[in-house]
Image (cartoon, rainbow, N blue to C red; front, side):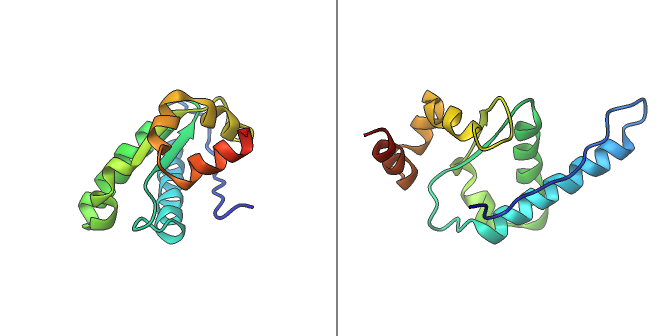
Length: 122
């Protein structure tokens, strides 16, 4: 079941990137508000941001800058809980790939997600 889904059409990069830049900021804002609205950062130990390419890394940087500019102390205090990981696609099958990744497993160790993963494997 989806808690929050973000769908933004990104135009192809051209000589002028203003359309692309506006679309990517719109995407970042939707992801950011999804995190703020649907993730209880007081309870969550780890948030894995994943996808192909560099968007996840750029978003993480953008989110921390946005949190600093707006004084969003909740995001800033949980900065170390956010982890960027590579996934080959943005679809649900990427979850299996992520959960098999050693770096992700280290990040989610001692969380309910790891307990669920062990139960699925067992």
